[in-house]
Image (cartoon, rainbow, N blue to C red):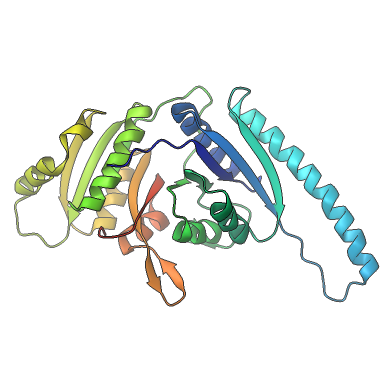
Length: 288
């Protein structure tokens, strides 16, 4: 099973109020795993085509000054939210947010991306912003989409982590990642299976789920199991809200659709409609 131990975290922020929440999660993960944080802010300048060369030169000079100001603001925010002990870098990059982030992922692959579900940039689509949506579809490393209130500075643990599974080998990969996170953050791990069409009694479903969970996974954290009948996405969302789950760990298997990538139906619905933060684990084969 893979070991989840991110040493390099990419943290895109847009200086909106969501940025405080994003950085508080990055701080939590960094302290637990000893990670370095690379913070990027994307600044986009669009000039009208009818501007003269002189006007464009003046605007370009103003853009340099603006990016310097943005870099100082980003660094001040990072110092306030991350504190003096966590290693981080700050960069302000010109361009389109999605393009810049994906280029960064290609040239300097991190172990984890931590970003908000939506913020100042991009058009919101239900509860998942367009920037987050495009990055999660293309990223080949785990991506943490954060929601909820800011994590207090003195908090170093989570209470509950939820890992939905479908009893496949790739689900075991997700469960291993969830176990590593739960262990480092002192959380209880709940492994959930939801099946819409299964004539078996729930007690039998629960027994199969318990037998499926590897014993070495149980050695890392406290594990509980729950088997439910019904639509997977609906059951995951309702359970997470009812039990006040801090983090959902989900497999993200990309499927080609024309020239774009799409995520599985369950994963997309949980991302769009869920209230908990979601850690997406890339999956190349199998899974849901």
